[in-house]
Image (cartoon, rainbow, N blue to C red; front, side, top):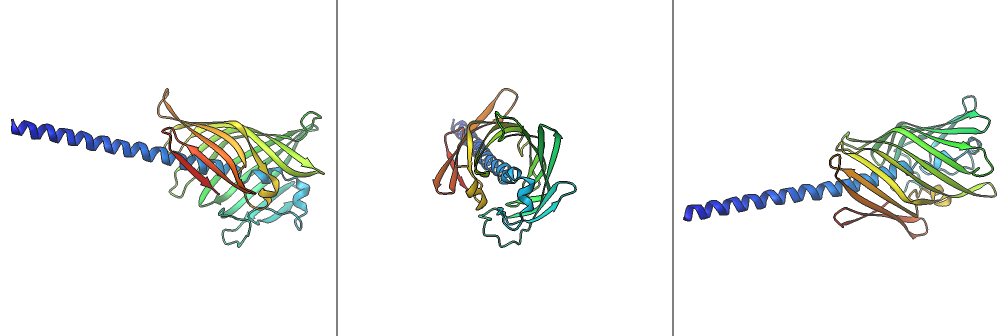
Length: 271
């Protein structure tokens, strides 16, 4: 009887130990997913402001302020602008966003009513992770929505320091607000889907538009002051977990992202 008692106790301890290991895996997965969500959102928004500058803006290189303090190269023949960032730059508008590599911006007229601003990443890194791919911002000249930009991208890669990547495609609508022909703010809403760094399918829908202040962006603060996102990460074809992100203003240009994980825990991120 005594040996049976010890055997049963051993089995109970073994099962408890395994359950503890499973809990640790689940905990790590959710927190890792929260970190990846913020990394992806920041990667997509930190260069967004550049796409809303006109070709004429970039030609005024002595007066245009840009976060990251890039060298600006303008090719008037190809109607192309190259922003060259240096990781060694002592730029006062970096604010924890060290950048290196190039962003190429091409201005394409597809017809008399439509233009496309194409943003391409070339050996580009921000905060140590690489971004690859192309994003198109379409503008249709109309009286109804002259300041609307419709964005689409098919294959954006965000690669972390270990070489693992997030692959995304998505679309968004950006509504720009001008005063005296100067961009003051814009709102963005849209969705994306793809796979995360573990290979799991992901989807994101913005349930409330993000709001960006142009003067804050000029100063290097790239996070939105408002906005809500819902992220789904699928475990299999029918099961998924849901994480919610709320963007809020703290003071002036200082904003934060609060991620509420599926299990109710909260993660707070700042630039």
